[in-house]
Image 1 (cartoon, rainbow, N blue to C red):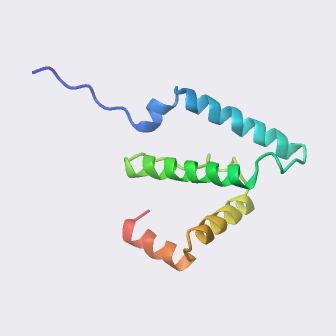
Image 2 (image 1 turned 90 degrees about the vertical axis):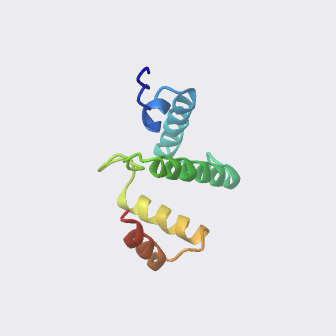
Length: 109
């Protein structure tokens, strides 16, 4: 019986995908706009759709066993950026920090 090929982790497979290149292009465009003082690059609907898709994609990779962080360590966003975003995500999902703490203690994440 031939040996089965070992499955590659999702992040390794996606690194070469066209979607990854497009996501990096969009990220660079958003960074340039922010650097030039423009905050209106995305409509509210577009921002919410993008946040939801990225949130679900990250969660799916973690659930599949990936051990990745959503941002590079010590870079990518300021502590304030992270706290504002985390607070907004919790509010949008009608969750409290207490519930997050309970979930983390139950799951070990």
